[in-house]
Image (tube, rainbow, N blue to C red; front, side, top):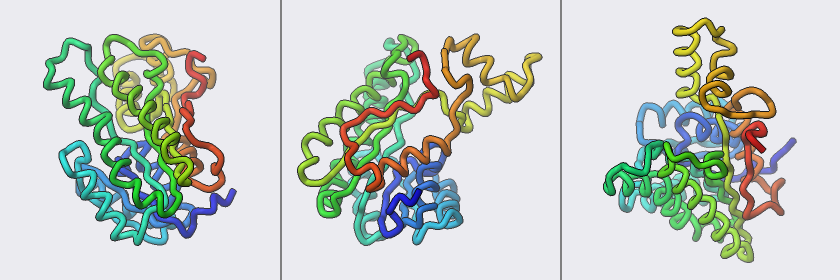
Length: 263
């Protein structure tokens, strides 16, 4: 399917690894121009190279921590300058907070900044350019906002706020042509889950190809209809679809991509 974004330009924040990188590569594969943002310069360079290899008309890397004060506005301005405009923004950052509620106040603030405020400030900075282009926004929540657990409630609370924020942006800016959707991934086999798969296979009698599936059911209690973790490229394909005109009447949605987990 042609997603009709070959002449478009996109910013992918958190696009240097995992689902963000998969999204950047999927978008680049349509011939789009892409700027990827991450905290590590080497990974950012590698991600831009992967986007070029996938077919991007242009690929740039930017190094920033968008949770830091002023960083989001700076990186969005850099991306607009490099790309000559902006047709869409994808934000896949916000990974910390898998901790109990008893963490100190200072740690709660860190989770707030990493999981919620980084997304908020990127979207806020990008909105003027997206209004001009009638562009699109994709943010990232998590399966855990539908099944919050006390052991990781800071993370789930802030991801819930990301979903609410995204719906609010969709309602406020829809008449100006801006679409905003939020995805809620389940267990996706990024590098961290692959490491768990390898550890289980190395320390138990469970075969490597079954190890992660075993721990997901027996230890995590996940009931997944498809019986397996997701792949980053499956999330990347969803991201590319959501930023494209093919999804032109879809906005304000929370899109589950979790293999049918406990539904």
